[in-house]
Length: 285
Image 1 (cartoon, rainbow, N blue to C red):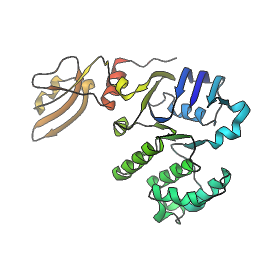
Image 2 (image 1 turned 90 degrees about the vertical axis):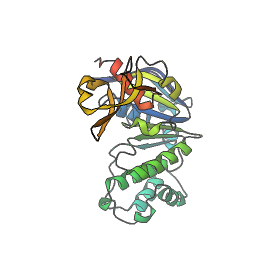
Image 3 (image 1 turned 60 degrees about the vertical axis):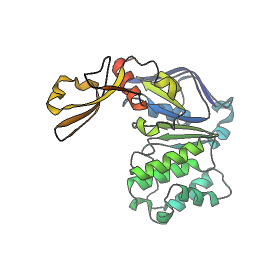
C-alpha cells in the first residue's frame, strides 16, 4: 500500500497537488489529458523525484528512513525508457537483475518467456522494434516481483494480440500486488482495472472502482443508426464513435436525451471518461 499526504511538487508552469490518496493492491489505471501530471505522478511514486512538500509512505515506510528497501520493492517502466542498444534483451535483464541485487538470474528467462521476447533475446536491442523494446522495459520492471509495479503507457507500441497478452499478465500480477498503469486507451482495461485514478491539471478528480466511475454520470450513452446526411444535426462534441457504411452512420454518442430511434447503452470506462471530461472544463492552477 502507498499513501500520499499533502504532496506537492512545483514547476514554473505546472504543479501537482495530492492531498490524500491511498493506493492498494490490485490494478489502478491512471488517465488524464496530456500535461495533467500522470508521468510526474509515477516518477514521484517511483522515488525518481522528491516532492517539495508532503509525505509518501510505502507500507508505512518513508523514503527518508528506508529508501533502499522501498526501491527494491518498486518496478518502474517509463514510457520511453532508455535501453542499452548494444546489449541483448537477455544481457540487459541480467545486468538489471544484478543492479537490483537479485542473486538468481534464472528469473530473467521467465520474464523473457512471459513477455514473448525469448526468441529475440540474443539480438542487439538497437535492432528491435519499438514494441519489442517496450516489452524489454516491462520485463526489467518485473524483475524480483516487486510489490509495486509502475508502468507508463506499457502497451502503446504493441500490436493487438501482444496487448491482450500483456493485460492478462498484469491482471494476474495484480492479484496480490499493486500495479499502476498510465494509459490513453482506457477502453482496453474494461473489466480488468480494480480502480480508476483521473488526474486533471495536477489534481485528483476521481479515485474509485469501475462501478463508481461509471455511476451517477450527468449524461447518458446512446447508440443508433441514421442516414449519413443527418450527421450534421448531431453535435460533434457529443460523438463518441461514428462509422459510415453504405450511406448509414453507426453512432455511439452522449447526451441528456436520445435522438429518435436510438437506444440507451451501459457506459463503458471510456464513455465515462468522455462524459466526465466534457462535464468538467479545463481549469489551470
